[in-house]
Length: 477
View (cartoon, rainbow, N blue to C red):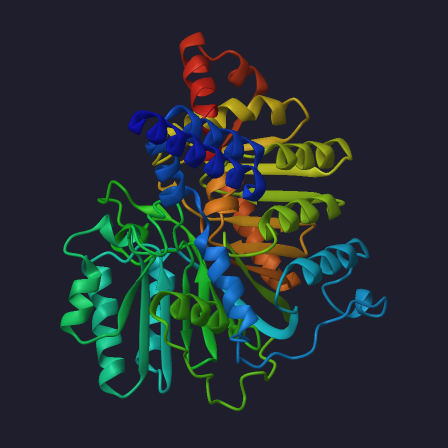
């Protein structure tokens, strides 16, 4: 009788867990995987699903909205596209009207005019500028990053943050709980010795939030007094000093300095993450001139992650590619495209759009490079140009459309960024800034090696098998 009761309970638990997966998982592959786990591992399967499979983060985000705890940062009215703007602004192609309409519907923030965006190449340009801004801060410094190393660069930032706190500046630092483990001692320990207010994003727990090993805070945001912001793909650490040729694992990257109204979007994103991690509601910046125009760029900050209702990045990236008429330039360190992205890129190429994809020739994650290779023949056969960039490892994440629109930030073109990571991106309409990015890409092309279809097709069978096997795990890489 006891065995029958135990078996019945195990069956009920498996059926309930599998039913929950069927009702709430959006990706059929994920649904099927969890059903198999629940059914084939008696007792333990439903427990694994309960700990790892439930998205409590989206539920908590909805509770915030129900209680009206949304942003208090000021934001001007939405920037409507009109035919008149097509001659007077970066909306110089009518096709961008549809992209603007798409972004208005799937994002929570409006496109704002009056910004100045400055590209900062590698740590040699980005870190001194960021440190100068921290040293000049008078009201607030908010810093969020995936990796914060405790090497020389990290200690320099910690010293600047400590000095800002000593001046009476409100300093808050948020580091991803997994990303902080990239160096020892952990930078968070060093900050606490300096009495800097620091928190971890999604620390590992078996309690309310679950053991979300896959859900990482991948955003890189720094705001100073609500007037200056920095975002992109650059973490804090010596590895981003690309000019140090003695460093074996040096990384090349592009970060962006933002001045103007859209800095409020960076502060808003940080405030949401800080409240989620600590429960503290940060006050709105007191400056009265936050919304004064600083330049000619139209920008919008885009928060994306498993807490959002829309899969924004998929929609916006595919929408931007679909709007292209002349050129698409993509630079990314990790390229594991989902089927809709492959279709969008190939469709654009067949429409006559010049499509260029820039990848590192040596990836710091070999299994990702193997999976990537398995997709490239499918693009090359439709005349997509693919270039391998030489070392240092290129960590830049850029999407440029028709030399007029750019999407920059922390997002890679892989399932992890689209489905699992908390990402922050900036969409930019600015001919001057996009022109600089195009020059950067043109220089990269000269230094890169073009990949041919024959080269991919003539790989040894052993390498093809390895690549194809890695591709099987694409949804999880």
